[in-house]
Image (cartoon, rainbow, N blue to C red; front, side):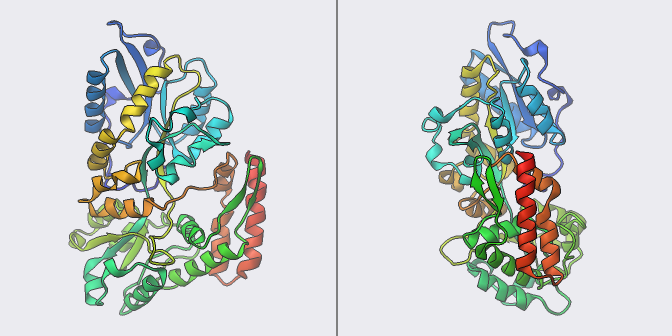
Length: 422
């Protein structure tokens, strides 16, 4: 799943010559020089033109028998496009897909089962937030590509003035105390809109709860469990230490633009949000820092939703060996380090976190990603996000409704949506 603002990524211009609408029949066979040509779908803005060219050149040099044709796809409508491609006789050979989309594509039987390749690919070190949603019914179909997740972006000058050391904020209680101290003299301790449900999910996971539980076709909403209710209680306490709207998410209005006005000490965002802040208020350049969302205890950072991508190989590909070679290279340690440095992404393995050690935003992301999670791994979850009863539940609680009864209503709505969507 693609996060709204990816770390370190501004508007990237993809060369027109690298874009295409479909898999394209002209590249379905081998190239004129006898090489096997594979069609690869990558998503717009996932990588820069420079990195893409560097990787393709390096790959083709290392594997002279394989030619690569990359086609850039748009995120809007990609689910339907991939579904149609998987059902056709003209599917591409490798597809980048959002990590939480893999289950719906695997359910159709259109993806190659790569379970026997996990060891060869170093799967023991994969980020769980990419690897787990890349599996379906115990089989691995999606290979972790890159990750991005939310951190706390904070005003270093306001923290210093208040005598707060951001590096020392390891627990949620410490975070609340610091935010309460910052929430004075016209400054919002934190701008947290009432419907940022991905942040709520992290607090619920920290308490041992989940958004929904189940397996196979038997899933039900779980917002009414004691653990989930404790997560909502923490969200409510944190949200009260600012003036975020209770009936809107982080996009309405764009929270980075709110922070740019100069009266907000913290927001929860991907690190790329800092670029938006300084673009809107250059006076804040050099005054923004990052730290992982604190955990319930100081044993580890808080749980976060992991966004990002997996790579899949369609079962209909006639060039699966060459496609796997491509996937192995792009998700291997050498190119993962280069990708992390070029794009400020979190690499796909916890053992590669040092690749972003010199990047403050990405290193904060990597710390959280190590304990990150994904949304419930079921094809029916897409229907939940389409209706999103979680947002309505959060607004109801934040405006005074009884949390337990509202959670029961939302859980029932989640259950119903997953049944219709699976």
